[in-house]
Image (cartoon, rainbow, N blue to C red):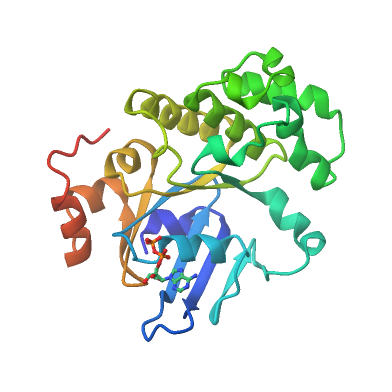
Length: 260
Ligand code: ADP
């Protein structure tokens, strides 16, 4: 693991994560170690079937590993009753892949952004917090009274980001956060994710098959292949001078990688 990954204060960590699905003789995940340090932006990349989604589900305590452990600030995180995980859900939030599908069409934007505050029993003035969040993601606070279908795809992803930021998480997990968006707005949302992460000091774990997004957004990269970590290190080093065969193959598959 790269010194950068290790030197930041560890928040979300996986140790030896292993997951076997019934009926499959090869594990989907096989002894994966990973650390998301405070304020770091870590990308998980790898070909389809590498285990990225499985890793994300385990890190979010949506599934139980067969071996290994997920910890948050050193405290073990086990899937269980929602109430028992409130502390973890406040700390680690998800930016959805497709905000068109994750936002309920009949719920007003203000209500949708405030929902995690209500569900996680976060104290304070929720209406004021919603207005602050909408501004932070570049929307007019008047958006609160409108419905999601009145917004474009890029704006809906801003709403989804505001919702994820509502309980003041320390880590955001984003699985392909811009893949459902038009190319033209992709860059705007990537910029916004980077700005918000800097401004709020939120760490990001980004799963993406798009190395351009990874290069523009992430400080560190973990390359998954066949359920194992093939390589991990600073983004610029891994993308320009990959050591492992798997990282090499990923980088070589991109015709001209423009590094930010
Ligand atoms: P990625 O997100 O990198 O495409 P996945 O985590 O989805 O990879 O899949 C890793 C491996 O686990 C694949 O071989 C996939 O077929 C298998 N897999 C994933 N989810 C399930 C499941 N619910 N049941 C059985 N096999 C699964």
